[in-house]
Length: 511
Image (tube, rainbow, N blue to C red; front, side, top):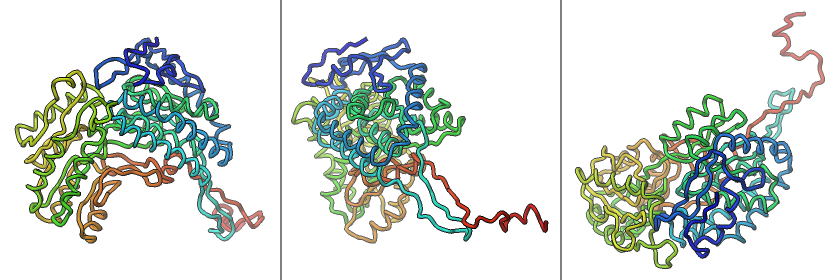
């Protein structure tokens, strides 16, 4: 089935690329064989834009077979050959940047200015980075560590990587999964979220058009319960890389552990935003609003808990409410839109439920409702500021994943850092102060995989992304990600040519 829905070519210029189905296996598009269909919905309008056949276990098996067959040749390619292929890949994506941006905004609801200015250029940069990094897969220098032997370390690809990407940044997270894996010589089967498969499919098509061998990058679009769990448990998949909620991550780990796979998990977050009493208040307010609302708050590193030292607390709440109230909700494709809808009405309702429950124990300063009028059909939710919530409440402890910022006061520096660490999560955090010693302490003592100082959200290809505690383990981006996608092998050569080695006495004794 190919149902392009009711969207216009202007909003969805790449729609004809999906005419042959929402699977991409061995260099070719295909239809899923589960017998069930799913519709990609424009969350700004609620209208279907593309209906496709979901993948089932048989489709996963076919994709894994294609990846397994492609692995020996791709793993055996020189670093230079893989690098050249990735450079061509970056060029193809850059040439199709507008197609990617519009497809991303259409399926996610994010403003086109965000897709154009962040998601697509960030992905192109990530491809270019790994094109260079592919030439620098090194081990430790060789040496005679035992005296009688020369040792060196090889880095080798693991095999077929089964990856699962989420719906909030489907293009970027697909790239984060695919690029370090293939740069290191692995092959990949990626399952995108069934809500948002379009840009992952465009990415696989671009890889093939750039000359990457068939089977190196494969996409299966199905449900987590059916296609995802089958992929994670597949005996020919050597590694699983998952980005998503902590709850689902636990299930992924359970399945992967049964087959003793390498496991990389990038899970939930509840990022603290710690404002000390000497901070630049205007900068902190602007940073909090931008950090809380980017991608309509559907960001695992979004600023969600602002802890503000008592002397600045009331002013921070008052000043933060004002720009939140002036953020412009609207059509993601309209130039004046600051904030689009959430990814789905179901996600919007989950966020609304969390905020409505918080009214029993906290004060909703602004927002806390879906807009009416011309936006009523979309999955919109107003930017929401909450104050007065207890530290142990749901709105403070749980990942809400929407445009919601909670503000709490603290008195001493010790208390501020302790509160920042007082959730199960540890993905990202920020600290705001003019005092280098305060900020230095924050970077040491806040338990998170990334701590920003006087900013919140920026990421770069050269630096790692990943968390502590319930936020998972392992790193995306940067050369640190190669630790996830390579096996380290010790090779040891005897240098003596002796028949009887000294250590043989432990077996032969005095004979």
